[in-house]
Length: 449
Ligand SMILES: Nc1ncnc2c1ncn2[C@@H]1O[C@H](COP(=O)(O)OP(=O)(O)O)[C@@H](O)[C@H]1O
Ligand SMILES: [Mg+2]
Image 1: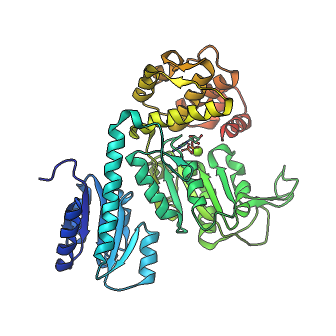
Image 2 (image 1 turned 90 degrees about the horizontal axis):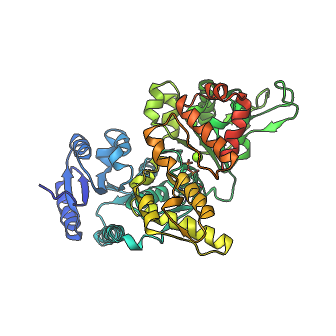
Image 3 (image 1 turned 120 degrees about the vertical axis):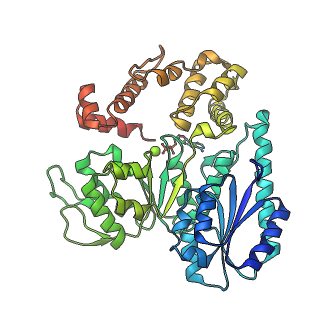
């Protein structure tokens, strides 16, 4: 029986001699190594393993099911080396597009592999140390625009680094406020497209009947209100990256057209005759489980497969250990710097921050910190931690707004709680709030950062 906390490595290869020498090397570095000889065995092992950090998979095995195993959820944030008997640039780039990190030829360069695994082992143990040291969690590592030093974030950094340089479409999956947009910008910055535009469009903040013209643009006079020609997001993002937030909110008929455009690279403006070509990388995001969205008829399966060449899971803040306090400190430092103050967090405040479940993730943490910063004269204390957040979880039919909130803040909260209560139905929400659908969309739009 392997110890619970052991860090695992997998080798999947039919070549016994190769597996056993690689196995010895891996165990020397300190990993527990599991070997598989068939694709079924590999599948089984993946279904039952925790703490997997590295996988050596032979190309032949992975090809036998058309690379689809690389999409196994256990492999998403694991470093994968594909091993082959000879150099094969096409297989190599396909494997890397599908999520592999490395493509190695036999005979393996054992020295390189030892260095690679030793680095990984060092990274993992330094992470453990910093996580066990509660006092030392205030300075956070940064990757692109993302901050965090937790294990979950390190894995995310590795995956982002890996996918950024490919041109694959990426689907960011994660709760609201986990940093999906920041991750999308980071991917763009680290890609070859970084000097071209990054254009973000929130499908959920645009009235359904306008999504298509926002996406593809329109010609003058193509519908009432179209008094000028307008280029859409697709054209604006030419050569760069188009970030489609809340992809599950894109109307179904637009999804069909959108998929066609992704496949051909060509589109027409609404009311236009001419085919326009635009080379755009797509990064989409959703805060729903995509498979559930497919089942509920909100997301087309074929579109999902097209955009989820690389699904990336954003960890919720509550799973990020020391990052919670680290980020709180980070946001406070920024406010102190901007305002020339030296306010600090009391121990009681820190405990509350640590214990709270943060359903709104980093976005919520940031706004809670900003509020406390305004209220506190020097020390951010327990009194400055909003109680109503605690009450929220127990009773989400009521909204408690602390005295001292701005009207805008109260309004935003009321809008979100009503949206929650109507399961995101914007028409119903607008009706209940007594505003027009257009007003609701305008307000939601203004909340986008
Ligand atoms: N890892 C992170 N490091 C620093 N700031 C973050 C991080 N994740 C999220 N944020 C901040 O939290 C807020 C919400 O992030 P965003 O990317 O818009 O989340 P999402 O798109 O998942 O709702 C933004 O202000 C963003 O700057
Ligand atoms: Mg967002």
